[in-house]
Image (cartoon, rainbow, N blue to C red; front, side):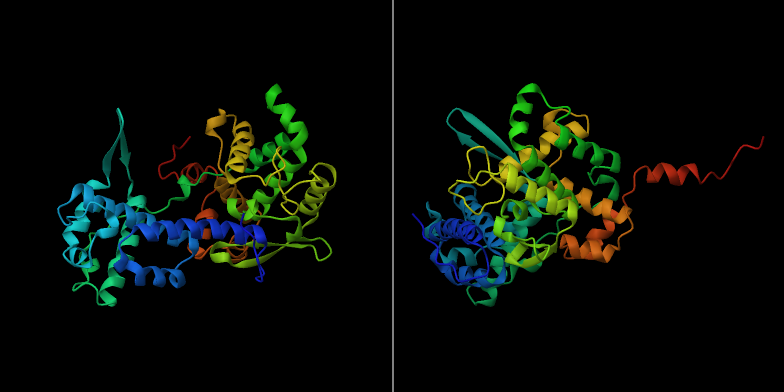
Length: 366
């Protein structure tokens, strides 16, 4: 039983969630070589908790590779890989790991073999983790060479506006209609919808109005909302607190759910969105919920529905189509770079068709 003594401005559920991630981080750190301890301390202040967890996972994976697939170390346990052995690693060794092994590798488990493949985006993340480690070890005078300078580039495809998946206005209207009326749901789904329709409507409206990230919505509490001030608080990446204004439709939807549908006697007294088991709704459940409703709006099978991130893209594109400034939308959605927001401004339905239809160089004369 973990008790939280919280003196920060963050709510207890977020502090508890961060604690669970930190416990996983500590477990990975304990399994890695001891000479990396200074690097672990560096990561605490350098990156967000989730990035720190991802980096350490990738570094652990590389250490396992050194034992299983290379002759760089004589150790049979990753915790015993020595600093001297790491000092032998060259740029070429890491390039082989990233460019050859990681693109396709195999893991045997009992009678079955699983094939794993990584695209360039996944390879780039692994490269970032290893670059961070080797840069630090060189700067910390634990290895003799800065091998990062010799790592091969990994070309990432530029994001194209045409590739952005989002709902168009008519599909968005259909989505809201499905959530409000249950149209398109199976008889079995309607039984659950009848008990959760107010909750589901509030969730969909929050996603499509503010472009919230899945984590930001899942962490919402009743205490996050100040209806007197007409605002609510969310916690962005890197635990950055952000105050969001409430409009009439969002305020009405959230109040309606709290008053008329949300369970009153529950262990998660402050959690806003609850499951049928009266527990805080999980990210997995929210993702499944969004996929179900969007599949109907798109007239596609259930497994072809959109994720919450696609509703974030929908919010960005729709806001820009409604005439709001790119910089205002950037601020609302918390994009680090305005070029990300600009992708949504370029994404208009049938834009290619419209351009070509109005640009005919050799029109037939009648």
